[in-house]
Image 1 (tube, one colour):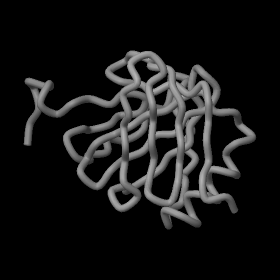
Image 2 (cartoon, rainbow, N blue to C red):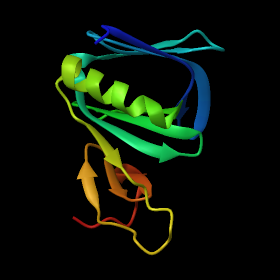
Image 3 (cartoon, rainbow, N blue to C red):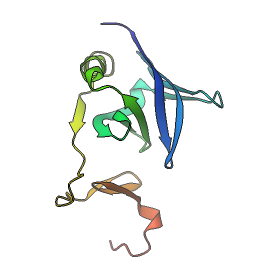
Length: 136
């Protein structure tokens, strides 16, 4: 198993905007470098709480959740890259890369899941603070 994985032409989703760049995974964590701005996002391996592999508009995507509640989304992977990423997550981050099927058919909305500053009803993720009609 290689100590580093690199992916070109990966898109980071930030508030609905897709930013192209390069993603690198190594023993220390995950690094994304934006191609246009040069900005580098670094997620430490010790801060990773969960990794999710999912089908998205641009092929397949990787959703990373941190222990502090932040969510990072990267799209543009090929289906064949799942095994390589899954093995890397097990070996270096000691996490299982979960496969998640998103609801796209319209008749299964799933159940509400609370986590960090978000609550999720597949296929939506809503910021708790933005919902004025919430009840405790």
